[in-house]
Image (cartoon, rainbow, N blue to C red):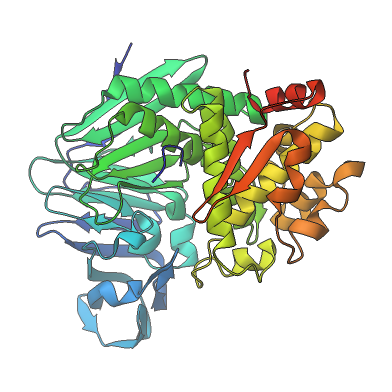
Length: 472
């Protein structure tokens, strides 16, 4: 994959416990997670309201058959075990409503593509995501009290404040717990922002460097969006042997999970991690700080990829030619497949098709949009200004994502038809036509597209390119 794509004792800042089950937790749903023989997890649940229908997610982010991992589902009421019907994968029905059930779930790692979207566990570490460990019930979604019973020497870490020896989780679908042996915990505060970090194992980078680079990215994104996060972000970094990949990441709620292949041949680990942060940490804002609903992956993945590329350039993690090289590689990837769906349609089928349109076309459309704004305003306005407008309105106000994002993007005369052309319709992106008038040559070889700054630039072209980050 190309290059783009004072530490404090954290006991009081990030909550890591060596735990056995607590007693006397608050009323409501109660969960105990027990681990004795990884990768199997034993879960027991007590609800406040009886139910006879227990359903679990069977798919998430392209990972299928999650319900098949559940074994030994049992229901017990007043000391009597009840008959259970397994209607389908992850679907259980009882003759009468109960408040107590238990089951085992095998969360052995499966394909690399499933990581880190779902829970996984090895002999020494794991990530527990309550969204696929717990049943999909309204009472559970309203919050749970959860305790952990782990092997000797293991810890559980979470940005959630502990209660007694467990945790009260208000949004289970967003909750992530890192568990394992020898977890290292650290935290740093700078410019009014705090970042927390949990790592495991010996690494070729220091925790101090990770926190410092992460805080730089957070600070820049706070200025870009004009929104200070309402939570303290946490990064979990775990070693993981992956075939065909150096890293996998996902940001859920306030937590960024990063799995690193310890055999990766990166020469500059710090630089690579910082580039990963430019994308993943922006997800703390988009979509995690917006109250928007619907399928808008084209925006929170594709547009985020472009924002991250610009951030990497701004932080001097890459040079301007690498910025162009990255766009050239994305363009080649985009041209290699059929462009037969609008971005709205591609978002709806992101996990059910092999198309990379959400990322590739979404990123290129963001690039084209940014160029259009900068050209219209003589460099005074950019895509970043649209993010500020979005966050000014929809941090607390629920809305349909595609509707309000399109409305925000088409708010100027020069962009009024942009959505119909590139987002709502099937129209190809043509960099060969768009870039030369701006001072960027598009050269096609037999194997790749090469973007480069024209050897001779007019003054207006040079001024325009400097707004993008060109420095000559």
